[in-house]
Image 1 (cartoon, rainbow, N blue to C red):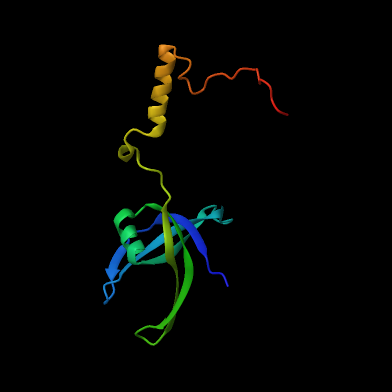
Image 2 (cartoon, rainbow, N blue to C red):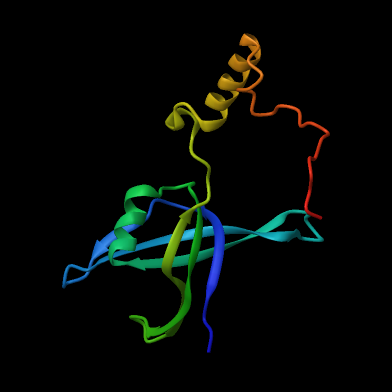
Length: 150
């Protein structure tokens, strides 16, 4: 049997961190996932809102680093729960039990400081300005292949 699901979307609201009676952390949140196609009638993309629940250290990690609007990649299993509400109606809920969560956004520019690209480009420009051909990482290759064994 296989029950494995991966979704990518944005958090609809900040994760809600709670603790069970035995002090086990549990985080609940909802992911909005756009469908890949548009509605014929309206021409708009439809969005699915998928409930997720995470336990223990994963729950604490999510509540610390994810917030409303964050892009997240969620990996886990689908769980369907049945219960009876206060009016005696039978109810059903589907949710993803999160095993792993990954950041879907790139690091913000103001948080990143000097990025690899900007510092590398600076070094390349400096090498060109000084005329040092040996430090140029994009130097021309010679046409001489030497003696190749094949």
